[in-house]
Length: 616
Image (tube, rainbow, N blue to C red; front, side, top):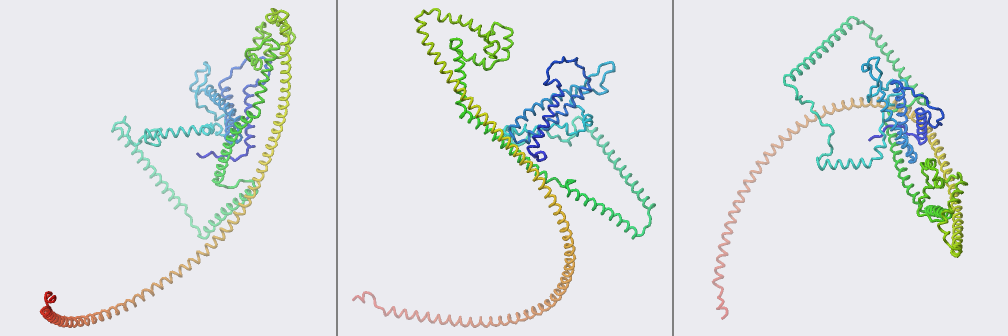
């Protein structure tokens, strides 16, 4: 779909819009709960029961203000390109949407009733729950346009679920092609308006048609009479008030009126051009080019937004991998040393090895209900004070531990004799030396980790300073870019003004040239038409002359053709006679030759000897 038309604004503009929205939101929160963030020293007074009108006015003002905040935040979230900022804006935006829905329910609940639905005066006034609340009077009082109450559907509903929507549409289309063999299924059934209703008889239908037809004819007749009366009245006024005027005077009056009107139009146009040139009035534009630029800028911002989101997600994964690779071993060693130190301290204090790390996690992550149990159960004060580790009453706790520790040691060493104790003492001393070495090693590791932490913290501060410096440079570059854009727009205005002047001069020259060309074209056309007419006359005369010549040539040709035909016919007859005579002579010669050749052949056969005679 086409994106909504919006101004192409910079990141700083949306940052300021976000800041304004958060300031307004803070003001609304303080207005709803004035005691928020203050100490509850003063006792709350007796609540005042609000009236229906006061409650409705209060919730209506809150609803309108939250709607403005919601629109600003939605616009910021849609156009911001920084992924971290968009996450923060989304959290606040969802909370504001929840509050808008709550205020809408409150408006429905405290909707003031209509006058005709009120009970008699002795009865108490009650609200009229109705979903369609009227906020026009409040908008007029606040001097706000009606668009303030339009609830925009957040565009991220569709953008964040684009893949799911695409898959759903694909599944639906495949299901419709498979089951219904169609691409689309209309939601609403088409109703045939020409079909007669089934609950009416034929007589009722005829009566309704007759009534409508009589009404139509009556209206048409009334309009006809009205037009006739107006024409007659106009004709009567024209004939009665017609004054004779000199045509020259009438022409002068018309010219005077037209010249005055034309001069006023020209003066207004020149004044507007001057105001546009000096920048005191916006240029007259159709808006098509601006809308295309806005749509292109919006698509570019959305593309940058998606690219930044992908880069941010990839950077998070890379950062997690880098931290796991670089700092993971150190963190594991630190956690292991922390638990090892706690186990060592526990052994040094209680002379027993703890079974698990439950007490360690209780000390590291104390739960809030522990403080209440300390007050209610003083008998377990020692253990809970060790868990909290706040440093209170250390002397008393130490005395209690010292008094209780010998009781625990009696079960271990009181039953040993002197020889066994002498054997245990070196072992305990070795354990003590080992614990001291481990403690020193832990302290050394702790100092090393602290040094690494300080160095890393300093590097983080340096990086933050570098990032803030880059941000300031980017803001400075954006400011310079805006200045360059303004200068460029001013140059464009100058060029457009010069282009307009050149266009006007060229149009005037073109009109003059077209007028001259039209005149020369008319003259040339007249001359060509005259020449064409002369050529037609000459062609007709030449056609007549050529026709006479053709007739005479045809007569001569016919005569010569007849003479040649007679001559050829005589020659043909003579040739036929000659051919016949020659043919008869040839036949006779051939017959004679045949007879002569036959006789010669017979004589030769008689004279030729037989083969037997020849052999002998």
